[in-house]
Image 1 (cartoon, rainbow, N blue to C red):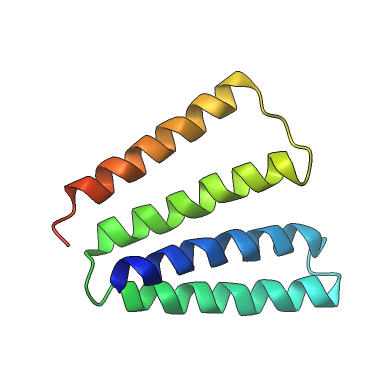
Image 2: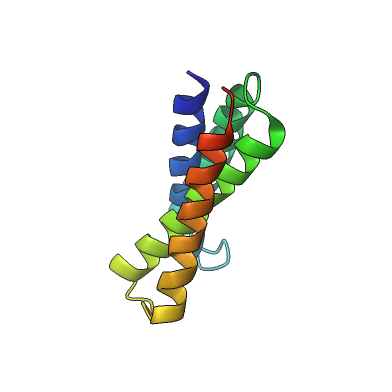
Length: 106
């Protein structure tokens, strides 16, 4: 269950980051509320995963899911740049996440 909780936490991190962008500096109420609820839910699921998973593993994977997820969402939804260097960086992050997961004893 810890890995499922961590996956949910990572997805929620992408959600709150996206809505934070849409909040325009917390000046739009609905995106601001979604940002706050999403971030609290993300932290809660992260904390549940950390009951079993080591801190370093859980935190690195959580931030990695959020980083890559926000990167993909930025490209696909917000029309952000998908240049070669950014793509290579995202691939390296995913490779690091996979190695972290494979190296975990849980």
